[in-house]
Amino acid sequence: SVEFALRRRGAASSNRRLFSSDSAPERKVAILGAAGGIGQPLALLMKLNPLVSDLALYDIAGTPGVAADVGHINTRAQVAGYAGEEQLGKALEGSDVVIIPAGVPRKPGMTRDDLFNINAGIVKSLCTAIAKYCPSAVVNMISNPVNSTVPIASEVFKRAGTYDEKKLFGVTTLDVVRAKTFYAGKAKVSVADVNVPVVGGHAGITILPLFSQATPASNDLSTEDIKALTKRTQDGGTEVVEAKAGKGSATLSMAYAGAIFADACLKGLNGVPDIVECSFVQSSITELPFFASKVRLGKNGVEEVLGLGPLSDYEKEGLENLKPELKASIEKGIRFAKDN
Ligand code: NAD
Ligand code: LMR
Image (cartoon, rainbow, N blue to C red; front, side):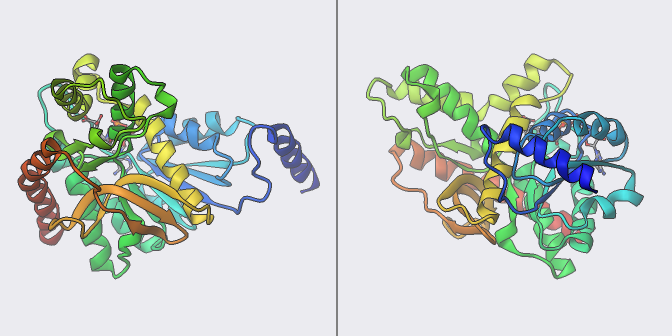
């Protein structure tokens, strides 16, 4: 309607100083698990992203309320809530990017792999629906254990005949966010300037921050400092799980990290050049079939999986040490998808 068009134009012009989105193409983003601890703040952040034209919020329950709430924010995205499996198809149809934070989080004393039995089935059924309703969407997998849920997704898509390795991403951005924060604090540099690649996987020692490549470089950090920073990054999730003392795991920092990664995917799809983020993807840079490293994003998803670059001896040792665990987690996911 004319009224609708005028309202849209009004909102766009009041936002113009913040975002120049007038020429951004239509992009639909779906969040599966949108009523959860991550899902709600992630829905908020995606509603604020001017690259999003449609935001579909799906969960087993609770999404009409989240959608009504977030939908009142005067930004571009049109928001719709979908609750229950019978509405999943509608939520997914036409999606360019599907973000999956559906599933149970850890409690103190648990590993991410302890979530496998519940989350593997959730991820499998959601990916089966993605293959049916939006087979060419970019998938951002947040649900843990990421080291296994990404291989599960790949097998589901292969079986459906829709697998495109360029469009499946395990979201490891929170590891990068943490590494940047901890490094900036220790090296006493401005956190806004910091970059640190984090490679490997997303659990314990499979998380390998490459502080030898951190920028701005710091000469003040001792080997002990680097070891402590590495351990803190690897245990960052557990630090939050323990502090929340039974009330779940990282949600706010994860929503932030998820929004950064989804934004990078959208920019890539829109043809913005030189978009590089770390992500857990199908990879041939090591002997493992999936591996997190820097990835260049483009119009078709992964444009290039970038290599590891030069590693310190400590990082080389960390790389060899993480491989058996990461390999086992990948194989566990593949086996589950094949057997179920
Ligand atoms: P949460 O329990 O607060 O929310 C999960 C949501 O998923 C709930 O609203 C639940 O109803 C929904 N859900 C369950 N089954 C579903 C299904 N079949 N379809 C759609 N929705 C479904 O948990 P959370 O804190 O938001 O964490 C979610 C997941 O993200 C956990 O597995 C957690 O381990 C993981 N996580 C990953 C990272 C990462 O860095 N990749 C970081 C933090 C958390
Ligand atoms: C994280 O790194 O915070 C997430 O993977 C959640 C967790 O269980 O630690």
